[in-house]
Image (cartoon, rainbow, N blue to C red):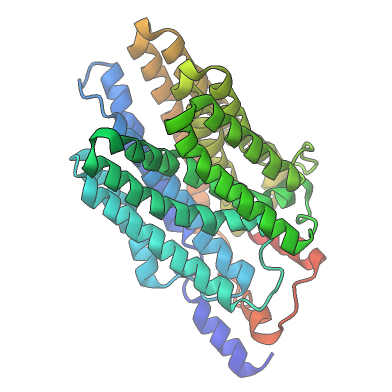
Length: 420
């Protein structure tokens, strides 16, 4: 590669906080987890009498999970495409928007709350599209990654639909329910499926997914995304069980198509947890299909068993590989086992809340305490590593500057396993 190209790449990479925004956004997500769950603990102990279920849902999905997803995408996509890292203003939006979304939700200012979140989704979409479009590696993303832009776009449409339904009221209120449900469930289901189809085969088996017949695979995933989106109006207008059965079938099919029906073979507890978290998606839908009277409890199989567990497990992989501690990932750190057990306990107590509503406060408090404790245990492992590691690589954009060919599979696997 020429000297000019090398300098261009080095200038594009910039400082560590731009090249590796997860170092800012992961701990912010952990703090927002406390913002979204602490009030449940206060309610259970009698310190407050405010029941803020909408605030809780917004903060967990549009605060906590959005921070983890944005931190991952802002770090991973430039490395995968050889593109420019996130700009300072994009990272600023990624930091400010979830906090503003949470703060406005606390004061029940729903319109500005959702406007902040929509602004962030637009920034993430623009960031991802521009890097993917400029990538010269034809195999940068497998067809399954289509779920990421598909559900990001779907979440924008869902926000509009929810707003129209909420403003209209009456017989159009179901539109609000459809839009809200897609934002709370559909967006991160799509992100797990899309990112998982790319990342989980590497984490679980040490190799990237096998290249499919691209045209056929893209068409199949596009059809699956449309059917997945259709399941939400089916749930609210036709039959709840039918909607969730559709989601169970679709998520199972996507995971199997990615080759994730086998147990992980790579060493490292966090890899097994990430794999298990993905399978909590169809499990959650199946629970609601079988027991529609326990819809909220079944949904928490996805919220806690999938979304939260995936965020903590994958963030451990990202933080430790970037800190130069990849060997630790082949072991079973007590912190990883600890947050997994605490999340499992939180899920169990959340089920107890619906099964034994007479002792509502007891089970709510136990679930909240376990969930918050899981974030503390996670932080003990991850936060000290956020300042560790060598400077960000100055050549991860070099390939796109010098070659238009796809990255060899062996090199792709090595880079993914070391620098995801």
